[in-house]
Image 1 (cartoon, rainbow, N blue to C red):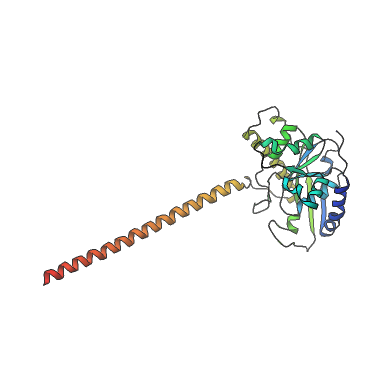
Image 2: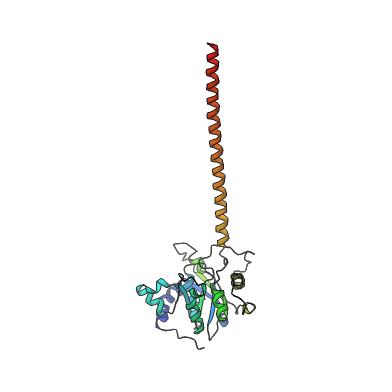
Length: 282
């Protein structure tokens, strides 16, 4: 299927965004030969800065295959922002859908039209203390298995040094380098023609995230943790610790109340005994 033309709105966005990106960051971009020249495909990209969607879009814009990012459907209904989102071909995600596959129907349709759909499988900025990719959500795997399209893993590093995760002020000097490395398609053929169960999607997602992490290891020249940071497990552990602390606090309070009651009882007993002794003395 022929690829879609870039179009006015994407070119307009490039005119606005490219100059400051060129000024602010140097570029070390590799792996463009792995971006398919034709047909629909998915890119799975790690996310470590609020700046990296713009920096990564610049990288892929230069390949001639512009990315179509997923965004909340509500953004497409708001004035200039909505017009820009629609004009640049971004993809609405209908999170209110009770059917997981229907929630990504627009992404599936885009791939089948020959588009590139860019996924941030982590779903948010990484919370790993050292910036490594976290465990991924299953949306990218779901669309990939439904369409059997190529999945291109992409790792990036450097935008996070310009604007670290959750930071409010950029670190402009010295000038940072944005490293991007796109790898060959992830082999998901073992998952084709199998029932799309939660376990299957989780396993396919782990394969995708492992490919992204391996590319980031190459960029950074170091090994990632053996076990990816899992926000869900961290929240469970935090709740467990909070519950244990609350239980310990309640136990301590109960013991304090018991000790107070025992002291009160002891004082009452002592007073009664003193009164008896006084009465016997008289």
